[in-house]
Amino acid sequence: MSKIKTSMVFIMILVLVVPSFSQKRVKDLKFHHMQEYCWMRLAKIVPEITDRVILPIGTVEAHGAVAIGADNIIPNNLAEMVWEKCNALIAPSINHGFTGQSISQFPGSITVREEIFEEYIYDVLKDLVRTGFRNILIIVGHGGNTEPTKRAMTRLHVETGAHFMTVEWWKIAFNVVNEVYGAKAQQPGHGDLEEAALVMSSNPEFVDKEMYEKLGKENVGAAGADEGVALMPIWATTRYPEKGLGYLNFDIEKAKEYTRKKADSIANTFLEAVKRWEMMERWK
Ligand SMILES: [Zn+2]
Image 1 (cartoon, rainbow, N blue to C red):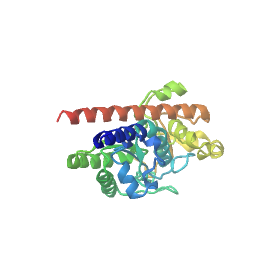
Image 2 (cartoon, rainbow, N blue to C red):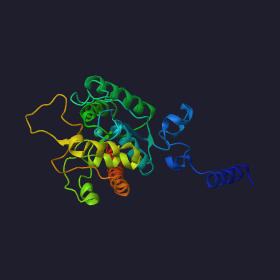
Image 3 (cartoon, protein in one colour):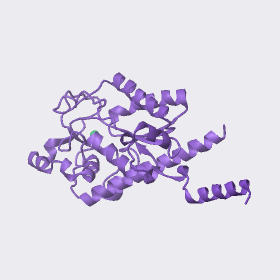
Image 4 (cartoon, rainbow, N blue to C red):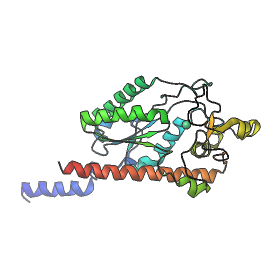
């Protein structure tokens, strides 16, 4: 066999035997949390195996009988449920956010000022982009974080061209509460049926049933006051969407089904966004 023929056969064997690095997916890797790799390994993974990352962001604040970390537990749990389908790594979460003043006075609540939070998020996202991530899914666990996060991601898109999707679990797939609980679909409250379901699906013990029943659902929670009324502090740390609605349900199977449906909706929307962003990139 000639020298050229021999090397061609050798190359063909290599192609057949060694699976291509780029055909691997995140699920084939050792870890799906980026912080568990050394930097040299991470540099091989991003962007060759994936250029997608999930950043869960939340805060610590009073939520009635639900754990004060609800806004962190939920986006972290949702990230765990969607990374494989999204073929994305998970970045270390941001657990301290912009908690509203009227609820930040209760024990355990922690707040970071809004302008500081925006700059902080901006810096974190900037280094994710520098690392090679082009498609970034931000799962928000707390409403106060949304606007500063949207401002930060807009600035970074303009500066770098990277793509971002920010999602609030309580607004996406609005009708899931009706499908699972037969409840009227509307803007959920705070520490109520829907938020408690997402926390319970992570760990049922993170909702203090004993405290909820001992103090009474009408005392632990209340509907919000009418427009034009400001309360300092808020008159209940659980806010029901309206009187008579949003009471906790301790059925774990339903909580898991509710969470699964929310997670699926987040993953499908992100995959659609990435497909469309990449399609439009090719048109440039
Ligand atoms: Zn919350």
